[in-house]
Amino acid sequence: MSTTPSGVGGTESMALSTLIDSSVLVAAANTRETHHLEAAHAISSLAGERAIIPITILTETLGFVRTRYGLDHHRRLWARLQATSFEIFPADTSLLEEARRIDERYADIGYGFADCTLLASCEVLRTARVLSFDRRLAAYRPSFASVLEVMP
Image 1 (cartoon, rainbow, N blue to C red):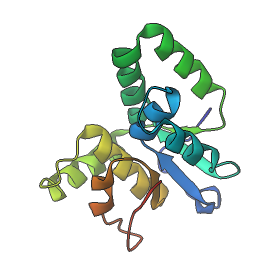
Image 2 (image 1 turned 90 degrees about the vertical axis):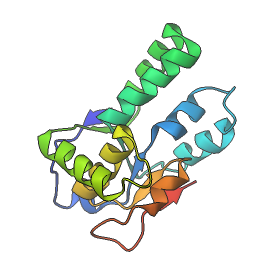
Image 3 (image 1 turned 90 degrees about the horizontal axis):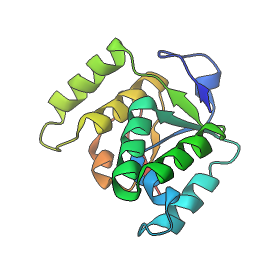
Image 4 (image 1 turned 60 degrees about the vertical axis):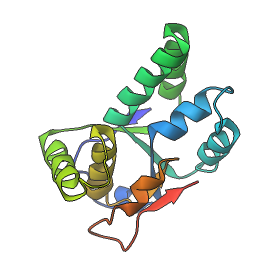
């Protein structure tokens, strides 16, 4: 797991990039989850691509896992994620301000804090692909693309 400074640009951000939402991470982490196989396949399909988890999504994911499955499972997932090539994207003040603007603009959708920071990360990284089971995210229109591709 590597970290990416906020506001990254340049050629690295031009590579095919996908942000990963907590719904997919939680489902992939436990065989008891309804969408486990679909999530595991979606994540494995990112091999060779730039896979990014915003720190806010990592925090939400680990919180969900601890609540649903306990501290031991939480710790195992944390260790497994650290052993991956997923990039962790930090949240800074400008990202949080962008997330707040998204929340205000899409108030009728009912995005939460983590959703808004995921979408703000899309803006900062200029990435219009997200792995998520939350289809409400598809209502978002990035400033740099005609649609947000929500997979799987």
